[in-house]
Structure formats: structure tokens, C-alpha cells
Image 1 (cartoon, one colour):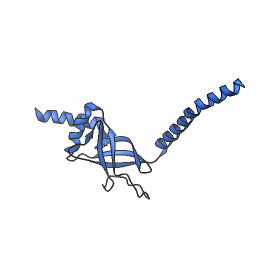
Image 2 (tube, helix red, strand yellow):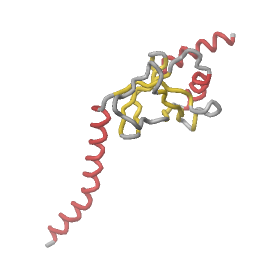
Image 3 (cartoon, one colour):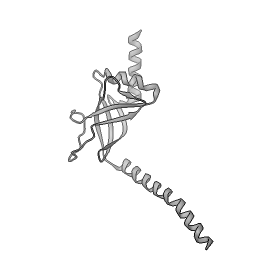
Image 4 (cartoon, helix red, strand yellow):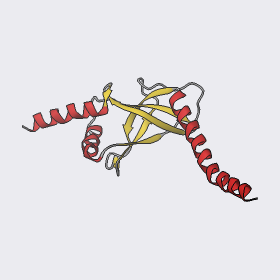
Length: 142
């Protein structure tokens, strides 16, 4: 009788863990196996693009460089991207004054949600492009 109670307690403790592990596995599988799309990003609000540690933006699905998926009617309109605090202000300034820079997000779609895999600026990783922009700003200030 005591062994049965131990088994039920153990099952009650393991069931939530198994459920969360299965859910996490399903989400990860979908993230890594879903088709990706490159979409041009446009600033969300020129007065406050950075919200906390996130860059807020709109997807520009009609831009010639955006890859618009076929047959999907309700595409996401806006998104946000985590930025380390030390880069947030400069990235905000770069996006505000984006004269000629093209910001792109490589995303996967899940219903009406988008999941960002990477962000590029002029085909370079955003960190590399931001470092070059900072160097240019520093040289112009001198």
C-alpha cells in the first residue's frame, strides 16, 4: 500500500516536469524547423524606439527587399528585439537617422507571432554595423 502512494506522489511531481519538457521541445523544434523570412524593419516611434532594453519596430512587408510569405493573410505588424543596454542608445540613434541603412530581421512565423533569429544592418550583423557606425560618428566629431 505504501509503495503505491510513493508511486502516485512521484508521478504527481514528474507530470508537470514532463509536460514542460515536451512543450519546450515542441517549441524548439518549430523554431529551428520553420521557414525563415528576411523582413525590413522600420522605426516604431521616432521619439522612443528603445523601450527598456528592447528596440520597437514595424515590419515593412511591402519593401522590395522583404520576403513576404505566400498565402499568409495576417502577417505581424510590429515586433521588438532585445538589445544589451550598452548598445541601446546608439542603435536607437542609428535607426532614427538611418539614411541609407537597411535594417532587416530574419524571422520565423508562428500564427500571428514572429520570432527573431537575427538582425542585420546593411547585410552585416547588427553588432558589426553598429561598431562601424560608432567609429564614423567618432571620426566626424573630431
